[in-house]
Length: 77
Image (cartoon, rainbow, N blue to C red; front, side, top):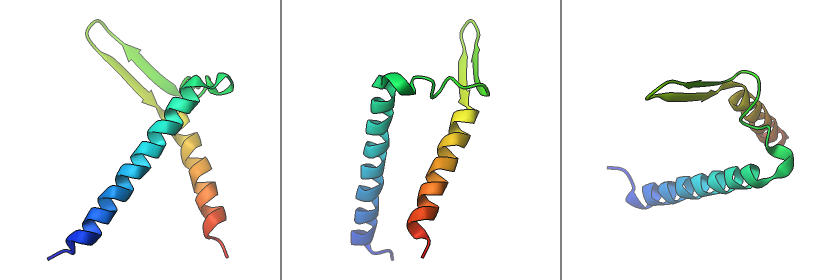
């Protein structure tokens, strides 16, 4: 049986991370210098009559590289 207190702390942590990511995305959307994020070459946007699909491939790769670099810098000894 899992420890419910640990599970509760984990869920609170995940909620705070999601809240932080949402705040950062709102800030990026309102920043004049970062308007290019999400509209890079390689970000696919397909729009049809009753259907639209957005795949931010290049943006996801850049964010992944930046986060990996930050985590590597924080965890190296």
